[in-house]
Length: 376
Length: 263
Image (cartoon, rainbow over all chains, first blue to last red; front, side, top):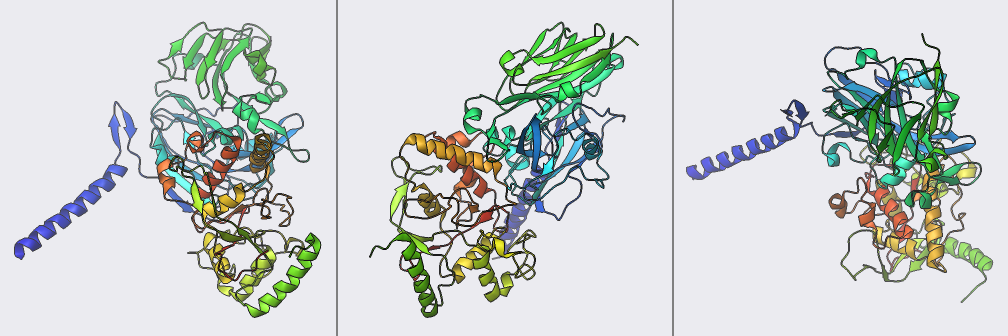
């Protein structure tokens, strides 16, 4: 009997230990080649949060990139809620977009290789979320929108399940990228293990529909040792290509065009979410300056042949990783979700057109302007 | 006995009143429609050549309205907004109502009730002498549409997907107003709201995970009709029993031997 008791207790202790080890296995960070893995399990919960839907120190509106002004690595706390917003994407073309943070694409998140990110997202698709009203203190991003609301964003309600898939994170998607219902919040950690420019998007089925409806953006992960040209760059921008599949719906609004999306026949192909924004508000530089553009092709489905008319890319880092350097490129071919960090020297005063050299797409809107002033 | 459509409704109303006196279990004005047994293909995995079998059942002609739900709340105060246990509904439960027994205005009385949890929907149907339809029953009823051709079915489905992308839940129409009904006369299974079903998150959901790009594997026949169906399954699977959204209401189902009035 005693032997039975002892063995029972031993088995019990082993069982508990195994359980704890199992728990530890889920929450124990580890490193390989200096990269950090092993994030704790995501938390899904409900909260009565009605504050700013975008919060984060280095979170900015396209095409701006807030420079990193800290040494070493940092732990970022970023909130990026998802909710519906009626927006304009071309002259007279408005639709109820599914958004991260109220605009398409969502905000640019800037971090450094090796940084840790604690990310929080509430699915507020069943709430009226106003992104332009005053009083949203604590959000640089919302301040930028209220000063330049070029999409004319208006709150709207369309309850749908959503999720967040950061390509810049290395985690298990069935945990961190899981779908949450309207009203739920998800919170999880990830490390920016690799330098480069990475898209983020909603991965909830239909992923084609969710990304086409507007749920995508980019994270710029600056290399911890920088690019070799860092001290010579005068202007730094982020440009995102994506396509819309829209058709006229009831009333004046447009809606998702299923056939268009299935057959890759977009109604609009755009830079920074709007057919004319990069002409209405051109990028600026001066003759002789070095311009860096983090260019990302967010899709959902098309390739991009990015070119700047009148310039040659002096440096191209494919995916934005400093090891992937190429020089003297006229055009950079990017598949869906591909990116490149490109640099060129502005040869003289004048206008330079940013373009997807796949002209069928350019003529649907994938163009922009860089306006160069005289040599300083 | 076959009566002209208009007359029929008048008779039904009188009958309904009489039945309501005799059978306290029948509460709401909504009428149940009998659906014969049969089978259908869903987007969930199934044995090849063996579609899902569905026994005969009855289902409400239209979704439960704010007016119907108000009656339920009067008799079951524990389900009122200020009384409901957080175990049974999130903080969004009936958020759009003015207060406990006031949906806001008379205008919305005939609109479908939304922002109700699965627990609340269950309780309502039980009070009303029924239950929530099973997922298979609901989908089977929804598939009983008479299209003249595949082309028409595809066009309908394509519009339906568009509807999922354009619906504005701030403004809802009355039940019965979409003009969409199945071959048995069940109305608004599409185009008005999404609806709770009994087993909205089937055990298979974990296995097929439904993340990034898995729609294709859910499509038995790769048609747009099937694609539209997959969106319904995916959306349902994200909900918790306490979830409530402005797009989510319900209607009840009944076993064939129940006393629910038939039409």
